[in-house]
Length: 421
Image (cartoon, helix red, strand yellow):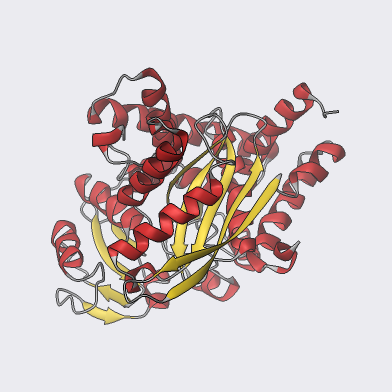
């Protein structure tokens, strides 16, 4: 398949191979889990407002549904590839199993720079993409959600298009919808909050007190990074280093997080031009002398060279796959200095609240924001401690422990169900 030569997919497979060897995974299960169940490749033609037609490459990859419907976001980004989406779908399988959710792993993407298109053009794109997927998604089959470059409005368009084609309202086809059509309170903040919950639990494990002297560096100040920042600020830590795709900023006195968010809202969602900090590079954000580092941008940001220069005590991986295989080897060697909360655990808050939304929709009974946040905290903390226990049992690195737990749950379900025919 086209994804075989993609570095992100190769990274996901190499991680899986290493873990399956450590856990002595059944060979027949392993060979099935190395590849996704299905990949849907779509050319999406869209009429622009000036009358031109543009065609966009789009994907939906379904990795494994042994434990329940495929679940995973749809991203709109200029560099989306089939291999990246395939890797993300695999990580979603481990993530859902790790959090003990009755869901499998899927992921979607469209190769587009969404900021360059109008609302109408994005709506046409989304509706055409959904119409091509209508036979492959559904509340009991595959449930998309927001990801990089997408938001509740795009989920609303997917839900409406699917419902129009089915002939009746189907709110459960997506999660991350607006609350007015069955979305859950707390969903937008969930991934960032989940990162913070697991990092706070890691600090507790390390007997490390988080307070006014705690410095936090966040690479990628989008939805995940900004909500993690809000939670860290609430517990008294200082957000001293931040960045987005336009560059980085440092303020050792600590940024006013709410002020930064308001500025970005008014400034096309970017930090460019924000004056309450000194300009630095993305590398300087990652290698800052901070207590906590949150890489919440894109994949493959921490390679072996960056990993060797890190000065933090705890890493909470807000992004998917922010550390390369080579970078991970360095972090394993530095395990006594740097505690890593891996992506499949740290950023699982989004899919967890997506599961809550799915359940609320099926029951037609909705929870308060306080209930959502309480249950999210309970699930994240429980998962963290389960991974920590596996780490101690097998004497392995945290990422390996998290993947052992997730893969083991999927493998047991596959062995119980058997192979058809």
